[in-house]
Length: 381
Image (cartoon, rainbow, N blue to C red):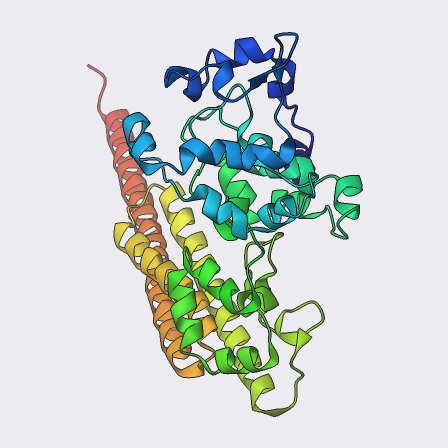
């Protein structure tokens, strides 16, 4: 259900720009703030009305200002002036230059009369909105069919961990369309550059993979490295179950149980499961002790260390080397064992306290009983 909600967020968002009159929208436009007027972009027809520019001329028209470094310095020195050059290298720009007006141009993404800065949360190309903007075309089956492309990518992204980070947790650094494909120079990353795109965020995993024997193999057979195991748009949170030879595991797609690779996969999976079981057991022991009122700070510190080793172990899977992985996993199991023992020691101490309290209670009751008997034996006054 949550994934359906995310998909709806991306694909069914209403384009409010089309519902606002141009005159009203332009009042809050960055161009109006810079002193531009309607005549700056529109030619006047014979009847005095403003003519809309042809779609194939919109990008060159925007570039007449945005590619002028001297002019842009007088308006906003921080704005880049190479966007049009990048656009000309993109699939959109190349098709538009060839006269195909069906592809995206500047106003399709930024708007025409209500253009806002990218860092403005209301901008259609702000991080929280850019997938909706791209999805208006790339999520439209009829439009994409004309280009021989699928319209599933925005919905697939909406079911990914990246979408969850952006939409559910509000993390504006989470990857969107432009993070991987670029914006003005938008183009699908090639097989040899996919890992470089992923490495912008996942540097540790990328460095491990680049030093592994798998990289040479993947490059030789033309595989897109990260995408082989993780996919591209519908990227899910990785799980230990991906490592294995049973049906549905990622390794099973290329490997079988025979040979050294099968043995290594089984060994890594066994160590991952052992570490997970150890941390879960330790957490349960510590939680039980805490609920009983015991202090287990040392145990919690040990468990935190175990989980750090668990994270490192999962990252070391990308090295495809058993030795460093085995050491880190073993260190994690040892830390988890210390955490579990701290929880168990706390429960034993609690039991001793309860036993001591029971003995003390019995002694007090015995004393009271003895005192009562002696009082009863006293002669009446």
